[in-house]
Amino acid sequence: MLLNKDTRAEGRRRVARIQRQLLLMEVERKIMQLESFKYQGQEKAAECMFGLALYNLDRLFYAVEGHARATDEWIKFLCLSS
Image (cartoon, rainbow, N blue to C red):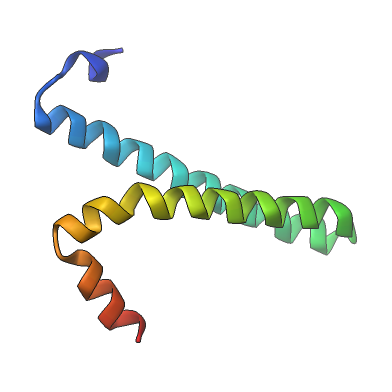
């Protein structure tokens, strides 16, 4: 893959950004599946999707936490959520 050959910091940031975007897309997909299962009355499947959505949210949180703290975005985020 072309992205893996780029060893500069810019390439690593690009790869990290793409990975975060993929995690976010996975979270959105799990939430949509969760709503679909709830709508269809499949409570057990909905519980499973809820757990998977939480798991992906946790992975996304830890993927962005380091960058957010390093760039002072973390403080901005905390101020917005208050």
